[in-house]
Length: 269
Image (cartoon, rainbow, N blue to C red; front, side, top):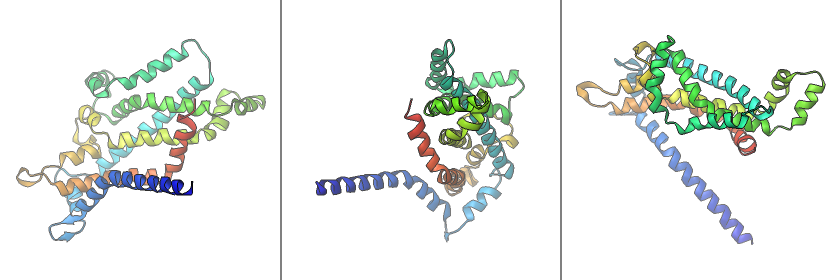
């Protein structure tokens, strides 16, 4: 019935709009609060965020960029090879090993951070950005390998077989044929790794001791107290917006591949 279809369509619109407002309201509120000043609106809160004692410094942003870059790169490298192995090869214990990999998701990472801190000390990576990146990569791998395995399984095997007939070995088929085909899965994995590493707070809090190695998240939290012990909420909101902007920009440019990664990769297999 035309009437029922119209009603159903309006129901989708109303529900979607309500959910959009629900999720966007905190971010819009933070943006409004970050621009509000005693005299009106301006950028005073952002100036205080970057210029006050204990505020965000350029090296804090650089540390976050380095950690995010290493985490994304390491996650993509290991997850691609792991997903390719699980999705294309048959070997003894494959299913058991894959289940053990997924079982890491059931372990709250906060419960083993102290043990990881001790382990990083043994190998000389305590209080280092590289050590922090390795920990973040480890916790990203279960989901990432799951995504990449399903992405590889969604690609017809005939493509790989035709490449091998033309003289490509397994690595050549992976780099020349399969990687372009699983690009949505790669984008999804990389985006998740970036969002996690860029906004992570608890792991840097435990694993980093030196102020000059702090990430932006730690720097924003450390400058939360203003004069007389009061909390500078306006500067904190400016820090929240500053942290959110790169994530929003990246997601805006990659949202199409991100959605395709879930629909064509994660939902198959």
